[in-house]
Figure 1 (spheres, rainbow, N blue to C red):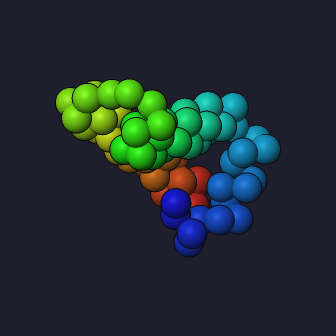
Figure 2 (cartoon, one colour):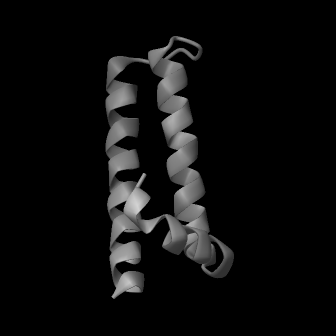
Length: 71
C-alpha cells in the first residue's frame, strides 16, 4: 500500500500513534477479508462488502495523512 510513501510510512509509524492505529486496523481488516474470501472464516457477501468499505475508508484516511505529512 502506497509504495511511493514507504519511507514516510516508516517514519509516521514511529512518530504518530493515530497513524499506527489506522495502519494496523487496515491491515487487520485486509487479513480478515482474505480469510472470509478464502472461507477460512465464515461470513456473508454483505459482511465482506461492509468490511471492504470500512477498509477503503481507512485507506483514504491514511492517504490524507500521508499527503499532509509529505507537503
